[in-house]
Amino acid sequence: MMTTAPDPKVLLDHQGNPRAIVNMQLSYEQARLGTAFHEAGHAVLALAYGVHVVTSEVIVWAPQPGTWTVTGNTAFEARETKPWHFAAQCAAGELAQVQYLMAYGLWTPERALACAADHDREQAVDVLTEFGYRLGRDHTPEGGKSWGMVRGMARRKVGYLWREIRTVALAMDERTVLTGDEIADLTGLVNPRIGGAA
Image 1 (cartoon, rainbow, N blue to C red):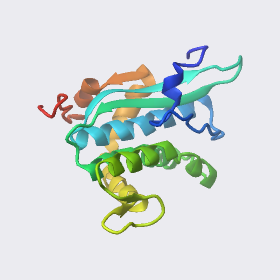
Image 2: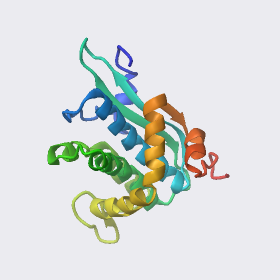
Image 3: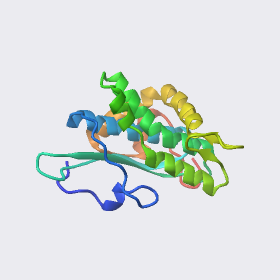
Image 4: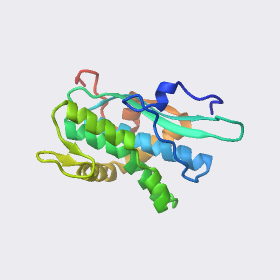
């Protein structure tokens, strides 16, 4: 565990705003593994959808003696990715984290709610808007999809790839950082080269 906070850029969302910090009332080990599942959800779905993953990691530090904070980051290159696939991989993190809570007997309504990653949703909304697609936060816009629909797409894929997500999460919890190529080796998925070539 780091004793000082990571580079402040890691704690910001895609717009440069601080990401929300929530207390899930979990032990250090439980919270760290939950974050590993969150990031593994992003990374595995990204690979499944043909996105190049650079790294996926759990970041933990002690802001004060006797305390700890945990977050994560998955870096990827998403050129030529289908917009709805990009949105689904954004949704996969929180869904994998909730599934972790259920699988490990830690689920409560409060903890499940704390898994909500609004920064992931907002990134999906902004990126899709940039390319002319309509993604509604709480409604289905004409000609588009709702965040609920995207979560449904991601939920099915998370269920289908749960074994791979679990494998990556356990490895990430043990090693802290995994490269996209290491994730591909662990899962049998392909980490496409940047620019779309395999």
